[in-house]
Image 1 (cartoon, rainbow, N blue to C red):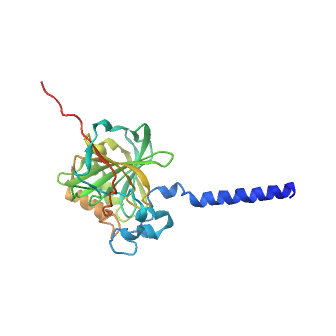
Image 2 (cartoon, helix red, strand yellow; image 1 turned 180 degrees about the horizontal axis):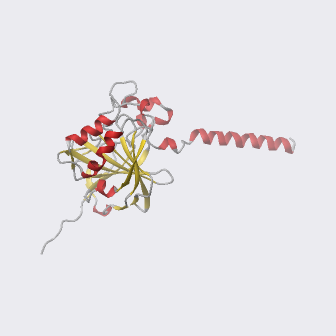
Image 3 (cartoon, rainbow, N blue to C red; image 1 turned 60 degrees about the vertical axis):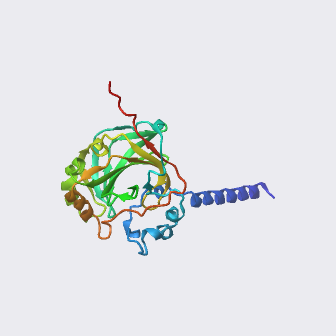
Length: 279
């Protein structure tokens, strides 16, 4: 075989390898929550309902086959107290943001540096905040009225989410500031509305105790490897605020909570500070 033929063979093999790599490795975009809410729904039994998410799109197979899916029930029987987890290591700051009606939920997206969360030495930058109603996670079988997700990401497509549960009661101060914008974006799909500077510390609160487990995104593509932190303190939201969030999304998305997923022998850790001692 001539030298030119050798070069041609090696070129063909290299091209084939690159093609295989491109088709086998999911794109970075595929790792994140889908923006096309028309492709899926939360209606059980529907053709695009949660039971069928894994069959709708080839990038969503984890929704049906994954062994570490979210949300789950945080049952006392499965939880282990692990004080070594320590206090949440985060540093948030006010930043410019916009509010977006994604159809399946309402999202506050930060355009500036809103701070970060550090877990096991890895820094996760706060990217966005959104809401689910009713809550996706349950505690000892109890489902709450709302759940807020603070989504953090790293450059290599790693995700960490802080979840906060709510029950109907007094108004939530963070949502109070957003009420005019919730009315403004009602039924306005994918239109970003600038809302000025938003302080994520108001959304996070000051509670220290939390659950920790490994799970997934709760919307397609259901990417696994997500570090979940669920704050144990349940906060309050008014009926009116809850109604504003539910009415703003598209019809059929008012109940935008994914059904509970199997735990599959995963560990659920609980961090609680040591009780204060008084002299």
